[in-house]
Amino acid sequence: MNDQHLPRVLILEDSSADAGLAVHELQRAGVDCLPERVDAEVTFLAALDPAPDLIVAAYHLPGYGAVETLRALASRDIEELYRAQTSAMT
Image (tube, rainbow, N blue to C red; front, side, top):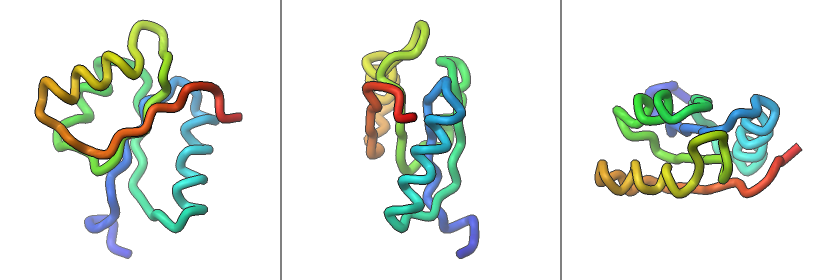
């Protein structure tokens, strides 16, 4: 499939292993995607333009988590599919 047609998945996760597992699970479910991992508020906010097709986020990150993520999305009128991870996946 051409990369231009793959859904862009933004992964807010400070653990590269957990981000990799999230991508693996998407692929196992048959979802080919263009993943982009960010691990802080500033990089997350920058990655919202253009808006991703899917956001997977750790519930707790140092200084930034699910509540702040949802607030950022609401303030930008972004209504993308969102999933928060509540604990380590590995």
